[in-house]
Every structure is written in structure tokens, then in C-alpha cells.
Image (cartoon, rainbow, N blue to C red; front, side, top):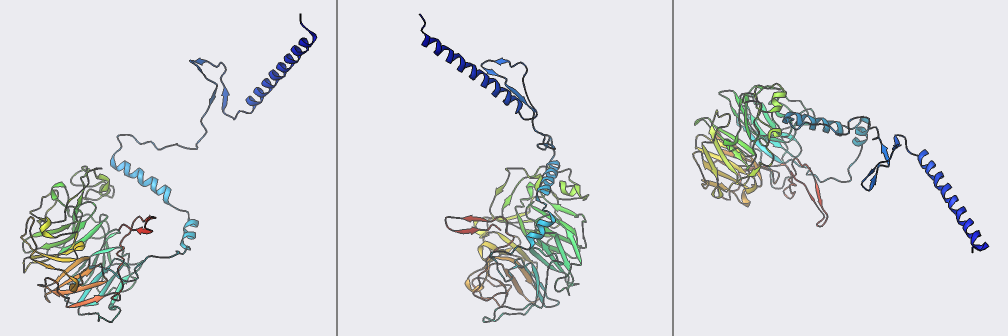
Length: 474
């Protein structure tokens, strides 16, 4: 028997269920009506296993390609072009942003305010010595007999070439034409080669420019044949132009290849008496993919319409890099292509540690090496081969030699010049000097007690929070 109380409870439950059902229908209709545009409910939801297709949504409009398509068969040149295009599109600030950035002042600067000499060339005819300043980006000309007194802060040059019009940037190689006195300046990470008249002074443009591969360093000239030689660090090349070449002129020839044993070449010197070419190598190298052809060389040269151009970084084989010990490699003067060296001076007995500038005495049959990280000048016979000790070593505190990167022989006056990047000095000695011998004269660009920061062509900067130190790779 059902009581009245039970009947009332049953009615209340049915009413509650009806209210819940109505709320459910209302919520469903609101949900459907509020769906974002582009989404539709499936007309007939279909069961797939335990899952059900609930809705279909179209992708939003992007206004263009979501990612750039590149076929697997893309050539090296296409990859390079796409990379350059992306970099250009992402790195060009607006005129307003550039103007705003130009007005910003640094909080503080870490900077050496004095010249740091990276290369040296002597002009015995005009009795001048020319020094490249890789710190302040100048070329300085001094009297050859200049000698900075110990109590003096510095020596004033006869003239300075520098400024935006000069386009001098990271000068690392020098040559003075013996006839005209024109100054040839290698700008390693800039245009390539700049030529100034022997009277150039101040912020003046070069009389001639020559485009060369990125990373040139050393220079040598065969005046008799009218040929100009330069080393290219990053691509392991010796490249040869006509001495009068300018602009986008193509080279005459170049030396490059796995058999050459060129490995981050720096200094360069010619022994014209014995038809030899000497190259100083730091030791790092890599392999290359073959280029478009032996006559065209690298992709960059082909794109610019060069008749010949060495293989560049875009042709490098990833993972093929290696580091060997420093060396001096010797070739026929007119070597080209993948020519192996005639001699290789290399090994622990040589004492070489990042050899930079080179000079050859044809009369004495000797090769002089600015041994950068060894703080020394090493002298070898031009016939040296293998792991051999130098004939002489000029090194020690009296010499003032510190991180020498340039060396030059003035055989007319029997003098050896050294540019010391590590202590603001250029020093001069007798050609036969050895051991811990004091220089005959010193040209100094800063007070004696001012240290050299050694910052040259810095790239990224890192901060060591543990030691609170800045790390500056150069």
C-alpha cells in the first residue's frame, strides 16, 4: 500500500528531473549558439571504438605560408640564398628604430684608447715605417728613426690615415710599393684590400679598392711580374691578383684543396730568388664540397660573374673540421689548384704557436716568423723541412716582444721590425739578433704602464656569473 507521503515524494522527484532536463536542453542550445565561427557539429556523430567525433574545426587564416618549403634536393647555393633572405627580412630595423638606437649612450665601455700595432712595413726609400692599428682602425706613418723616450707617453706619428671615408677596418696586412710609396692595406673582415697614396692623411678615401674573399690576412707582392698575393684564413686559400686589380676584378689563380695542407693561413712571404712561397698556418682546417667547376670555384664567385673564385663557407662539409699543430708550408711561387707543399715545417721542436707575419731574406736564406702566442721571433733556414728547431730565437723580457703579429725586413739598413699587438709597441733589432736582446729603437703608442686589452674584432660576449667575468672571443 502506497502512503500519501510516498506519493508526494515521487511527485517532487519527477518535478526535479523535469527541471534538470530543461536546464540541460537550454545549456546545449546556448553552447551551440556560442561556438566560434568556422566550427560545425558533425551531423551524425560516429562511434570509433570508444571515441566519438564531436566537432570539426577549420584552421585559422594565417595570411601567408606557415613555413618556408625547401626541397630535399636543394643546392648549397639555394640554401645560402634562403638563409640570407631570412636574415635580411628579420634583421633590417625601421628608420625610426635606427634613429632611436643612434641616440643611445653606453652605460660604460671596456676599451683600449691607444693604438695596437698589428702589422708593419718599412719604406727605406722615404725613410718611413708604416704600422697598422687594429684597435683604433688606422694606418700610422712614422719616421723610420723614431725612438720613444722611456719617460714619454708615446710617439706622435707623421700622419694618420683613418675614418669612415678611409673604410679601414681591422687592418692586418701591409705592403709599401717601393716605387710609388703607395700603401696597400689588407682589411681582413671588411672589403679586402685598400690602397692609399704615399701622401694620404686623415679621413680620406682610398685611391683604389679590391674585393677579396672574407678573412684575408697576409700580403706579398711580386713586383717583377706584377702579381699580388693574399692569404684567406677561413677558406684555407692563397689567392693571386694582378697588382693593379681593383673593384670586382677576378683573381689570376688561387691555391686551395685538401692536398695543399693550408690550415687557417695567416702570414705570407715570397722568395723570388728560389721561386718559393712561404705560408704560416695556425692549424685549423675543414673539407669542402666540390664547386661548380675548377674554372669557376665557389658559388659566391659564380653568382658575381667571377672567372675564378675559391670555395667558400657554403661549400664546407659539416663535421669535417680538425685542428692540427701550427706549420709553415712551402710551395712553388706560381702554385695553384690543389698543389701539395714542397716542404712543411711542423712539430714541437719548431716552437711555433700561432705563427702570424712572415718575412724572407733571400740574401741570407732565412725565414722570419712572428710567433704570436710564443712571444718570440723564430728564424729558420728557407730549406728547413719537418720537425726542426729554429736557427735563432729572439725572445725574453728585454726584447719587449709580446704577441707579435707582424714582421718586416729592412735589408738596406740591416734591421728587423716587429709589431707587438700585446703591448702597444713596434720594436726594431739587428737582422742577426737572437736571445733576450733589447731593441735598437722602440715606437710606443701608450705610456709604459698601460696594459693592452687584446680585444680585436670581438664577436659574441658571454658573462660568467660565478666569477663575475666577461668572456670576449676575438
